[in-house]
Each structure stands twice: as structure tokens, then as C-alpha cells.
Image (tube, rainbow, N blue to C red):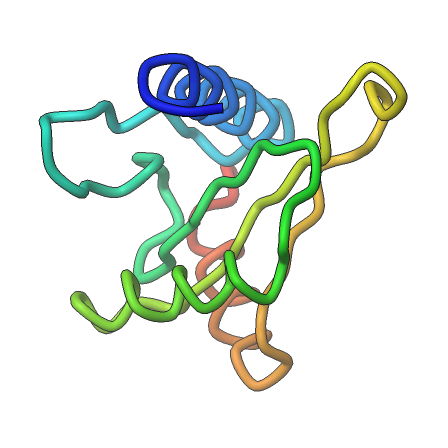
Length: 116
């Protein structure tokens, strides 16, 4: 898959990821595309970078390395939200990848964002 269809699939994945996060109480929306690299999602988890991958065969280590690089620009905690998609895997859940050392930073961000 290349070009426009790849961007459309990425856009669709970002919209679905934002909905999945919003469904569990983390206000989220797709950040959009401005012709250059921007965050995949806007969300209420302060100090957390979420890299979204919506692919038939996602490479979690590769996606997480991208999250590390993107998060480093702002000093954020890198995370990767991944969903495997294909006709055979429609029911696969969203998976969140984070380094164990960053767990408490994510927990703190979640607690701050939790609606009262």
C-alpha cells in the first residue's frame, strides 16, 4: 500500500484510536496532517506521546522506536497504540506499548486526565 491509500488508512486508524481512548475517558481527537510530521492524536494525557499504528502486520518494536524519536522532541513519555487489522483480525483489541520504566509517568498522566 502506498501514497494516498496508506494515508487514508492511517487517518482512519487515528480516528478509531481517538474514539477508543475517548470511550475509556481520555478525551482525544485526531491531530490532523499539515504536510509535515505532527502528533497523531491530541489528547488530555499531559506529557505523553501516542504513536498510532493501524496495520495488517504492525511491527511493535519499530513503532515504539518511532514513538521514542517523536517523544524525544518534546520530552514526552513515548507510547504506541497499535491495532492489527485485516479481514481475519477484525476483532483484535487496541494494544498499548510502553517501557516498564515509564509506567508510573503514564499512570500519573492518566490520573491527572481522569474526569472527576
